[in-house]
Image (cartoon, rainbow, N blue to C red):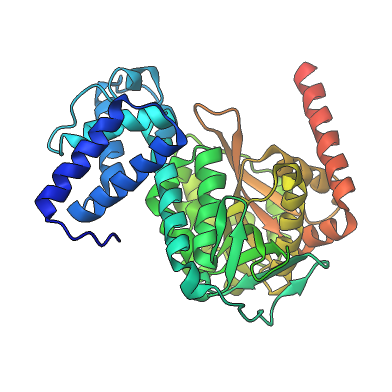
Length: 421
């Protein structure tokens, strides 16, 4: 990435000295940027492209070995910010790796609080650098997709078959540089899931957000580059081997099935699954139920999984952007024949709206929650579930943004009343 005409040995020594010198520096913006630049250069010149992965993996293993074997294992964030981690990270040597890695870890903790946030900020730095360098080569007005849908004079949405091949430029709320859709999508995923929600596990799999079929919502803001507001990855039935639903994390005993006769009847009546479904699904565990339900799918072309729904934009408009995304994603899925969407949801507002719509349903539930888990170290409960896009899109058509908010507030009041009863 950098074209520097000096000998490799001299460069390496100089970079190490520059990085180590920041150990005593204050976490100013200039020092943070210098740190990012030095580490980026060090990685490329020494082929340590997985530098942060190595530090994180080493510390996680070290912390797990020091833990009580019976203690529950948290996610990366809870593991690396625990009391035990405070006595290890940045203190103990990192064996069998360059000594510079320990300095990098210490500076990361001083500048960003912990190594995970530093890793996330470093990924954002790399994306912005790539966008800045490519700006002149790519900056030209791109043709508009024929499949684009007009929501209003400003908002538009569409499904892109593979964002990796889309050369249009988009702005985001997280960078001053317009960038190709794949980069912009990775950036809003990074900001939304990793930095805001501490889902640092995604750092190992950010490339998933750089390709594949995606729903996108964006806004014309004048000029050549629209503002990307949200996206969601669509994985069809043929890709079910890659579905997050079947990831080992979502198949453990930590998940509790939330099935009922009404939910099973909804699945049966949808026409997507086998007849007499109740006799064909295994409810002994989440894993057995998920796989038995998948085997019961008869209309494979109508089934998909929706993950990584990232919402971006000005803070004061995020709730409205979330509503628009849910509405037009659901409408678009129904329009292209994807009648069943597997989802993993933890946002209370989404779950509140879904539950409110279910309460009004007299036939097929628009949303079926299959199982739930309260993730250690967080205040949220995560649900695996299925959205039936036909009835759910009808619900969105009948509910304005104001109605949507009223339903969510009503469900919150009911939840508080139940908790206090």
